[in-house]
Image (cartoon, rainbow, N blue to C red; front, side):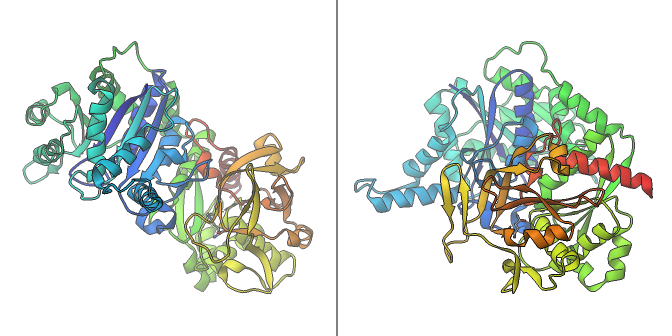
Amino acid sequence: MARYIFITGGVVSSLGKGLMAASLAALLQARGYRVRIRKFDPYLNVDPGTMSPYQHGEVYVTDDGAETDLDLGHYERFTGVAARQSDNVTSGRIYQQIIAKERRGDYLGATVQVIPHVTDAIKEFAQADTEGLDFVLCEIGGTVGDIESLPFMEAIRQLRNDIGRENTVFIHVTLVPYIAAAGELKTKPTQHSVRDLTSLGIQPDILLCRCEKPLPETERAKIALFCNVRKEAVIQALDASSIYAVPLQYHAEGLDNEVLRAFGIEAKGEPDLSRWDDIIDRQTNPEGEVTIGVVGKYVGLQDAYKSLHEALVHGGLANRVKVNVKWLDAEVFEQDEAGLAAKLEPMDGILVPGGFGERGSEGKIAAVTFAREHKVPFFGICLGMQMACIEGARNTAGIKHASTTEFGETTEPVVGLITEWMTAEGRQKREEGGDLGGTMRLGAYAAKLTGNSHVAAIYGGNDISERHRHRYEVNVHYRQPLEEGGLVFSGMSPDGQLPEIVERPDHPWFIGVQFHPELKSKPFDPHPLFKSFIEAAVRQSRLV
Ligand code: GLN
């Protein structure tokens, strides 16, 4: 049976619980254990798919088509274990299931209550799909004391009794703030937060204390005393120079040892951290740098493009260069053509990422034109590929009114709504006018690449599988005029109906993809498209 590590947070939000969970999982993995990480989100949305990226950051999509919290992206990037639908649950999903059961009459006249019905559903979720695992790490979203997270706290408290104390460890992530006026780190917020947690029946085994300055022994002893944990189990977590340094740092602070000790497992030898050492070596000793301009809509909030940013960093690691990412607001480009050239000229590569809605689209299209005409490496992802096709249609195929039906009615739907597509389970159909939540083409789909294409060379093969999240598709009926204009359809769905990749053979690096390659990139295994894109940007930087 798998052992469980529950991770809660206290004092403030944004302490990096997700990174902590991912890093601890990476450390356990480096000791040879099989791990999986799960996220419990207390909000009432069924999934984050319908939330604005401004509210919630990126929606991370799994192979099995789940729209999940962006923390699952960290989990997958740090462990290489592909996340699944069963790794993320929200209060909304739990309640949806329970209410559906209640309506069906499954509860046989009982009163349906938070305890036991909601807590049982949470426990079932935590324990499902865990075969062959040594450790399941469960991160509870939110902060101790939140009303929403109470059923989750209660469920994990019960789980400790259900599966045995020796099979569960509770880690509480807190903040030890530095008060400049006093010149001191303050432990009181941590004490209060642990008191809140113990009032819910949960005594943490390990405290991970986020702090700006090293935690003196005296303060560590004080926290241990007041919070009822061993002194060695009070672990300082200083800000790291890079997120990929966090596993190394936590190991140096003794986290993985403490976790094993709390389970009563004797740590054998040292974990193999060579993968992380190599990443940090590449990151701290770059041989050059490139600047990539990302022309998008949600540029005010970096979390909205979390995986994209990381994938660019990974491309840099593969090429031993530092990648500077410049987030450029597409809308600004719409009013100011001269400004667009001034902003894009210094870029070694231009990327138009995924997105939804018309706002800023003309600016994105203008950025594609700039990249095409100036032969700057161009990478279009999802909406970015669709914009590259509209740009190609308008400016290289003479289809002046090319547009997408996403932006309203058009006489030239170069991009349009497709209501059917093939999956492994057969043909999927989307209901017109149905719910917006969960109605996209989601998850992993296969594609076939043309033999002598640029992308086939990059992937080193003709069969790929990548993750999707979109409603609209490039319209295959425009293939011929677009190809005559130089934009070649070099990747298609296996049935030949859905364009997956376009490229320009007369350009040094011009590729648009309908899927999200950034979701599968890892620091120790950079995605081939990002590796190649950054390589092209390095060449570009040497030209100018
Ligand atoms: N809005 C576009 C669509 O739904 C693109 C989506 C995306 O970029 N993720 O097809």
